[in-house]
Length: 180
Image 1: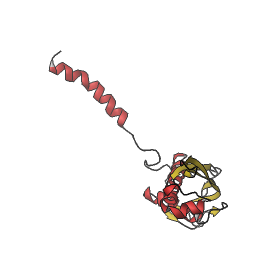
Image 2: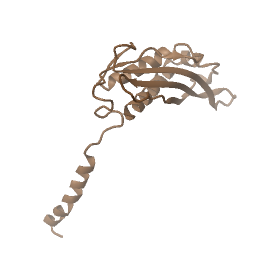
Image 3: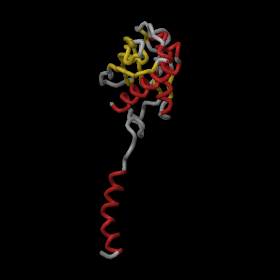
Image 4: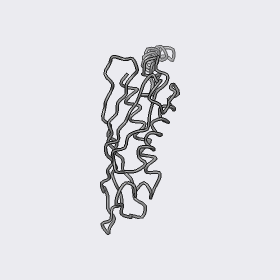
Protein backbone atom coordinates (compact mmCIF):
# COMPACT_ATOMS: atom_id res chain seq x y z
CA UNK A 1 0.00 0.00 0.00
CA UNK A 2 1.41 3.40 -0.88
CA UNK A 3 1.81 6.18 1.63
CA UNK A 4 -0.95 8.24 -0.05
CA UNK A 5 -3.38 5.32 0.13
CA UNK A 6 -2.54 4.82 3.83
CA UNK A 7 -3.55 8.40 4.61
CA UNK A 8 -6.69 8.05 2.53
CA UNK A 9 -7.69 5.01 4.56
CA UNK A 10 -7.22 6.95 7.82
CA UNK A 11 -9.48 9.88 6.83
CA UNK A 12 -12.78 8.10 7.68
CA UNK A 13 -11.35 6.89 11.00
CA UNK A 14 -10.17 10.37 11.98
CA UNK A 15 -13.51 11.88 10.92
CA UNK A 16 -15.43 9.33 12.99
CA UNK A 17 -13.28 10.01 16.05
CA UNK A 18 -13.73 13.77 15.63
CA UNK A 19 -17.51 13.40 15.42
CA UNK A 20 -17.56 11.13 18.45
CA UNK A 21 -15.61 13.70 20.45
CA UNK A 22 -18.08 16.48 19.67
CA UNK A 23 -20.29 17.35 22.60
CA UNK A 24 -18.07 15.71 25.21
CA UNK A 25 -18.52 17.22 28.65
CA UNK A 26 -18.10 16.08 32.21
CA UNK A 27 -21.38 15.11 33.81
CA UNK A 28 -22.77 18.01 35.83
CA UNK A 29 -20.06 20.36 34.56
CA UNK A 30 -21.44 20.99 31.10
CA UNK A 31 -23.22 24.04 29.81
CA UNK A 32 -25.64 23.98 32.73
CA UNK A 33 -28.55 21.68 33.10
CA UNK A 34 -30.99 23.99 34.84
CA UNK A 35 -33.45 26.09 32.85
CA UNK A 36 -31.90 29.30 31.52
CA UNK A 37 -34.01 31.55 33.77
CA UNK A 38 -32.45 30.02 36.91
CA UNK A 39 -29.73 32.45 37.92
CA UNK A 40 -30.17 32.83 41.69
CA UNK A 41 -30.35 29.72 43.87
CA UNK A 42 -31.28 29.81 47.54
CA UNK A 43 -29.35 27.40 49.76
CA UNK A 44 -30.42 28.17 53.34
CA UNK A 45 -28.66 26.54 56.28
CA UNK A 46 -29.28 22.81 56.37
CA UNK A 47 -31.29 21.32 59.19
CA UNK A 48 -29.30 18.88 61.33
CA UNK A 49 -31.18 15.96 62.88
CA UNK A 50 -27.99 13.99 63.44
CA UNK A 51 -26.15 13.98 66.74
CA UNK A 52 -23.02 15.45 65.15
CA UNK A 53 -22.64 19.13 65.95
CA UNK A 54 -21.53 21.57 63.23
CA UNK A 55 -22.18 19.05 60.44
CA UNK A 56 -24.99 21.21 59.05
CA UNK A 57 -22.80 24.31 58.79
CA UNK A 58 -19.91 22.52 57.08
CA UNK A 59 -22.14 20.67 54.59
CA UNK A 60 -24.14 23.83 53.79
CA UNK A 61 -20.97 25.78 52.98
CA UNK A 62 -19.57 22.92 50.89
CA UNK A 63 -22.74 22.75 48.79
CA UNK A 64 -22.80 26.52 48.30
CA UNK A 65 -19.14 26.43 47.24
CA UNK A 66 -19.79 23.55 44.83
CA UNK A 67 -22.63 25.47 43.15
CA UNK A 68 -20.42 28.56 42.93
CA UNK A 69 -17.62 26.52 41.35
CA UNK A 70 -19.97 25.74 38.47
CA UNK A 71 -19.77 29.47 37.66
CA UNK A 72 -23.30 29.96 36.39
CA UNK A 73 -25.31 30.76 39.49
CA UNK A 74 -25.56 33.30 42.26
CA UNK A 75 -25.87 31.33 45.49
CA UNK A 76 -27.56 32.98 48.47
CA UNK A 77 -28.54 31.87 51.95
CA UNK A 78 -32.07 33.23 51.48
CA UNK A 79 -35.17 31.24 50.63
CA UNK A 80 -37.03 34.22 49.15
CA UNK A 81 -36.38 36.14 45.96
CA UNK A 82 -34.69 33.16 44.30
CA UNK A 83 -35.23 31.27 41.05
CA UNK A 84 -34.67 27.89 42.72
CA UNK A 85 -34.44 26.65 46.29
CA UNK A 86 -32.49 23.77 47.80
CA UNK A 87 -33.44 22.56 51.26
CA UNK A 88 -31.61 19.74 53.01
CA UNK A 89 -32.31 17.86 56.22
CA UNK A 90 -29.39 15.82 57.52
CA UNK A 91 -31.09 12.72 58.89
CA UNK A 92 -28.10 10.87 60.32
CA UNK A 93 -24.33 10.61 60.44
CA UNK A 94 -22.80 7.35 61.59
CA UNK A 95 -19.44 5.66 61.79
CA UNK A 96 -18.60 1.97 61.82
CA UNK A 97 -15.19 0.40 62.40
CA UNK A 98 -13.78 -1.01 59.15
CA UNK A 99 -10.25 -1.98 60.14
CA UNK A 100 -8.39 -2.90 63.31
CA UNK A 101 -4.87 -2.80 64.71
CA UNK A 102 -3.06 -5.87 66.06
CA UNK A 103 -4.38 -4.88 69.51
CA UNK A 104 -7.98 -4.87 68.23
CA UNK A 105 -8.41 -1.11 68.27
CA UNK A 106 -10.27 0.45 65.38
CA UNK A 107 -7.83 1.92 62.88
CA UNK A 108 -10.26 2.74 60.05
CA UNK A 109 -13.89 3.86 60.02
CA UNK A 110 -16.63 4.04 57.42
CA UNK A 111 -18.60 7.28 57.84
CA UNK A 112 -22.08 7.57 56.35
CA UNK A 113 -24.23 10.69 56.07
CA UNK A 114 -27.88 10.38 55.09
CA UNK A 115 -29.95 13.41 54.11
CA UNK A 116 -33.25 14.22 52.49
CA UNK A 117 -33.20 17.00 49.92
CA UNK A 118 -35.68 19.09 48.00
CA UNK A 119 -34.83 21.17 44.95
CA UNK A 120 -37.64 23.34 43.65
CA UNK A 121 -37.59 25.76 40.75
CA UNK A 122 -39.81 28.80 41.42
CA UNK A 123 -43.01 29.05 39.39
CA UNK A 124 -42.57 25.52 38.07
CA UNK A 125 -45.58 23.22 38.13
CA UNK A 126 -43.28 20.20 38.15
CA UNK A 127 -43.09 18.66 41.62
CA UNK A 128 -39.80 19.37 43.39
CA UNK A 129 -36.98 16.86 43.17
CA UNK A 130 -36.82 15.11 46.56
CA UNK A 131 -34.04 12.58 46.43
CA UNK A 132 -32.43 11.05 49.45
CA UNK A 133 -28.66 11.23 49.40
CA UNK A 134 -26.38 8.75 51.12
CA UNK A 135 -22.65 9.54 51.19
CA UNK A 136 -20.15 7.02 52.50
CA UNK A 137 -16.41 7.41 52.89
CA UNK A 138 -13.63 5.59 54.71
CA UNK A 139 -11.06 7.18 57.01
CA UNK A 140 -7.88 6.12 58.77
CA UNK A 141 -7.56 7.00 62.44
CA UNK A 142 -4.23 8.50 63.42
CA UNK A 143 -2.22 6.17 65.62
CA UNK A 144 -5.01 3.61 65.84
CA UNK A 145 -6.71 5.62 68.56
CA UNK A 146 -10.28 4.53 69.19
CA UNK A 147 -13.10 6.90 68.28
CA UNK A 148 -16.23 7.08 70.38
CA UNK A 149 -18.33 9.26 68.06
CA UNK A 150 -18.13 11.33 64.90
CA UNK A 151 -17.55 14.58 66.75
CA UNK A 152 -14.39 13.01 68.21
CA UNK A 153 -13.29 11.75 64.79
CA UNK A 154 -13.84 15.18 63.24
CA UNK A 155 -12.02 16.88 66.14
CA UNK A 156 -9.03 14.52 65.75
CA UNK A 157 -8.71 15.21 62.03
CA UNK A 158 -10.50 18.23 60.56
CA UNK A 159 -9.61 17.00 57.05
CA UNK A 160 -12.00 14.08 57.53
CA UNK A 161 -14.96 16.43 57.85
CA UNK A 162 -13.81 18.61 54.96
CA UNK A 163 -13.33 15.61 52.66
CA UNK A 164 -16.74 14.23 53.59
CA UNK A 165 -18.32 17.64 52.96
CA UNK A 166 -16.70 17.92 49.50
CA UNK A 167 -17.90 14.43 48.57
CA UNK A 168 -21.42 15.23 49.80
CA UNK A 169 -21.51 18.55 47.91
CA UNK A 170 -20.18 17.14 44.65
CA UNK A 171 -22.65 14.26 44.65
CA UNK A 172 -25.64 16.42 45.57
CA UNK A 173 -24.98 19.27 43.11
CA UNK A 174 -24.18 16.84 40.29
CA UNK A 175 -27.40 14.96 40.95
CA UNK A 176 -29.41 18.20 40.85
CA UNK A 177 -27.81 19.46 37.63
CA UNK A 178 -27.99 16.07 35.93
CA UNK A 179 -31.73 15.73 36.62
CA UNK A 180 -32.69 18.80 34.58
